[in-house]
Amino acid sequence: MDGLDLALVRFEHDGKWSFHVLGTGTTPFSAELLQTIEKAFSGNAFDLAFAHKTIGKAFGKMALDLLSVSSEKADLISSHGHTIFHQPELSMTFQAGSGAEIAAITGIDTVCDLRTTDISLGGQGAPLVPVGEKALFPDHNLFLNLGGIANISIHGEKTRAFDICHCNMILNTLAVEVNKPFDENGDLARSGNIDQHLHDRLSQSMTVHEKGPHSIGREHFEGSLASLLEDIHLSTEDKLRTSVEVIATCIAEALNGQKGSTVMVTGGGAYNAFLIERIREISKATLFIPESTIVEFKEAIIFAFLGLLRSLNKPNCFKDVTGAKADNIGGAIYSGNSNKAS
Image (tube, rainbow, N blue to C red; front, side, top):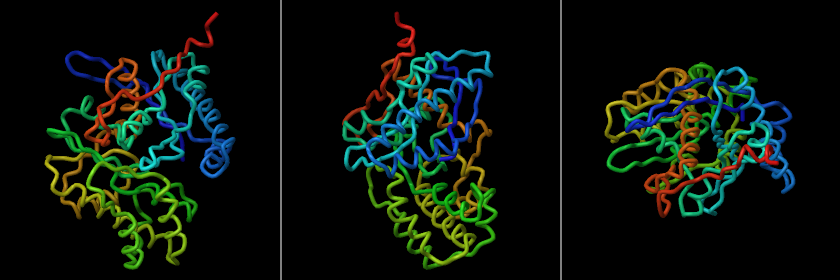
């Protein structure tokens, strides 16, 4: 809910894929856009439709802003959109941000709605990044992303990937209690103490019991975790310290027993020194944190790649990861030339 990550990327294929990042940026959401997004979660059908259109327009303008400071031109835009609902058990997912609006504003062909084909084929619609990891980062086989939700990818004879637990969604929500957007370096958490009662309740709520492909949405956070953290009378520091311990333990359980020399860690949580420290201590895993561009924009880079695969009519989602009936080609394409037609 903080902003949009954008990456301008050139991809080349010469027997294998390679990429070069030409530009990046993170554009904060305006207060007005944040209000529109929030109403999409809790409002009526009109609020959702209005948000879909409004987010698309905002994303299109943000893309043009990034391109305006680059000498490079874009052949294609690939937009993940902002997830409003994700309930694969109901065969439902929705990412707001109209691709038609983006294409109309930019004049560039736009790929969007990358998850629904997989959902329709019985999959989780997530995670999608393993396709990009396998093609773009072949020197690694273990990937940990510490975003709003922590997820892991394991590349071997088959590729497996799944959401582990909520991560920054919890930590950032708690940091707001003391008027901070996030807990920088994990300093607040480090200064707190573990509360065993909260620890046990969080562990019970955050542990995933499914053995097959699974994904986690905002609904789980709002349905149980948010109220649990609000209702308990502890200092923010103690709540953060306890949450970090539970998150690190969940991640360690997912890492333990995996084959691989190092784990590439990306996402905003990679900068949370205390969380990284606890994961290392509990899991004994060797964590590799790459250069900042990859830490911050790996997912933007990969979603650009997934859009490219869609435009080439090549599979951009693995059935082994999502549980779908087949590898599939996800995404809708809107023509950027529509507003130029005579």
